[in-house]
Image: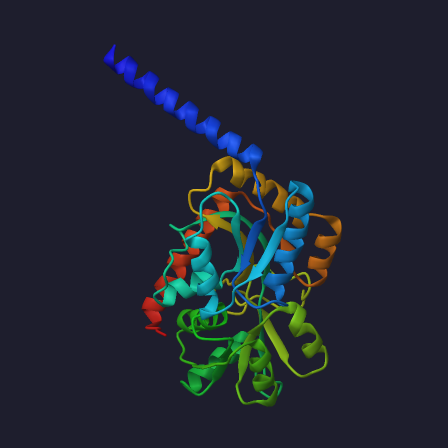
Length: 322
């Protein structure tokens, strides 16, 4: 009887919690929702956040306001969201940089423990771009040159600890070569440095790289994804070019603070998928070489955890530090 009583009590508590969570989801959102973007306005993350915010505002009947909080390599904005009330009224749209930052330096948030991933919105490869005069036509050539001249070949990044930096170091580690990192304040500074020959190569996004490649100002030699890009079908992947297992994607995802009730997460997941799968949005993304993902929260959570482990392992192997 005592055992039966405990089971009944647990059942009542569980039913009460589920009922409360369901009620919270039905009432959500009960006030304007803030979507924190941990980078400056105007870039790809910000643009995508505004597409999602506009859809949410229409579909859920409350204002969804994009709040740009740049600084410390996305750490300032991420910390705001990590510490927010777990009621769904503070969200974040971020790139993978908030994971790589936590892998290489001490930050006041944990990308796994402090966040509930809702969905990976989009993904696209980077392009490895070299100075036109560099005597290489492939990643294999670049590796051979770096092996012949240890530490002489240079690569630019948009800042220490970001995905451009760690993705480039991953190439060095897997290929067993040493190249020199030259950090800049952003891609806007890194591109001219490579075009002028001040630095040998850099990661770039397809949408920004294509015009420069067509004008002959930069030379694309590979894409960083596991499969070829539809926007750049003639470029091989890094893995195809002699570095098996190499894969680095640029992804943008939607997050909530940890412990937001499941029904609210489910509702946000459903509407986020509708936002990025709208025909006009998919057409725009495809033209930019970006793929729509909109995967399940559980799938995205597993990917975030795996990414953090991947980059922490790289930081240890390569001896990287801020």
